[in-house]
Length: 264
Image 1 (cartoon, helix red, strand yellow):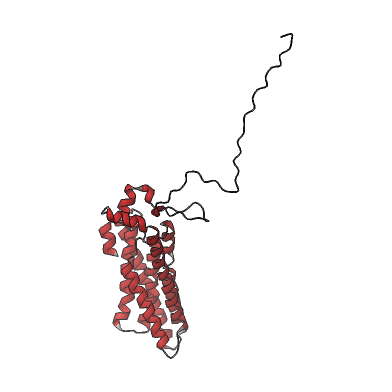
Image 2: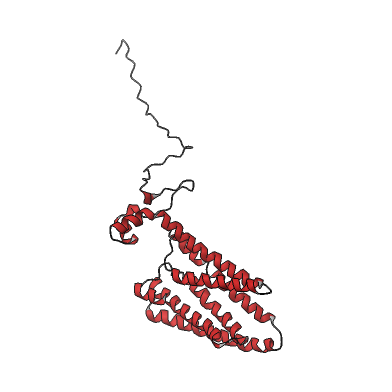
């Protein structure tokens, strides 16, 4: 994602809120892994995830909000330092109670991390609403890998003797939110299927084609009761009259003719 943003010099469609939420959830995930003394790979994974996500967030400041490179880099570094300090304090604070058998603080850390991770999948839906359901800025390879990871993790929980309700609920929520993104892109592709076909014949991408033919661009229907398939070539009438409306034509009154008398 970072390389793709740099290559395009754009972060269009990539919600900075999602990136910040995902970067922040790396803190409790890291605390959980380190305090419970997981293997080294699992301890490093949250740190890598948070660091890379913060870099992508910094790109949204530079490319999306047009901050200066130094300002965006400084903001990213300061946030990273803040996360590192917070994680260190939590590790030093919670390690003692956990080793003494007090487990509920670590359970709270795991719940907070899971909730933040799931909530991070909500901002992309606001971006979808802006673009009639089109997905821009999210890599489907990454999304597929992430969905499969949640699916197989859920299957692993099912295979256990006891089902972890908290973990299972998290995986199910993430899977449904990610499926919604796939479904939104599928519906958009179906709606623009005719334009995509025309663009392919012309040897252009969809964006290049609609830029040259603005009338082909998908626009939301003004009425919620009917959907006009612009891509199919349907023409929208210039004037639409509602059945409940009446057109009243006023006929101007003609001036009265003077009455002629014998004296005239």
